[in-house]
Amino acid sequence: MSGAVRLIRSATLSGVAEYAYAATAPAGARLIFLAGACPLDAEGATVAVGDYPGQAAACVENLRTALKDAGARVEDVISTRVLVASTRRSDLVTAWEVVRDAFGAHDVPSTLMGVTVLGYDEQLVEIEAVAAVLDA
Image (cartoon, rainbow, N blue to C red; front, top):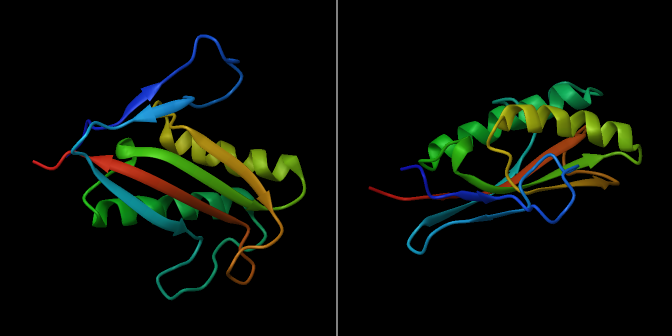
């Protein structure tokens, strides 16, 4: 099931980025396009209201669940987009640090974006992802 994703680091581009600059998956890998993981509990209520790191952590847990349901895991993610409802860079960084730490050594190519509003009441963070797996 795993092992399809190959992270590519650049010796030419800045080392300041906390993620690989690119990733590949071989021909024949099954791609999984995940809906944005939101900070919602099982009843659909927004959790950790007003708390960027709390919502980021909830998004990561929901992402892990969606990956598992699709036959994948975090190590199979090939890219992410982290959306943060804020105009303050510090709020974006706070959410990003939670996501980065959750992925650990699997530092997939990522985009961090500040947005004006997200879809659910009191929602501050959302994580989009694409994964790739080799089915047995």
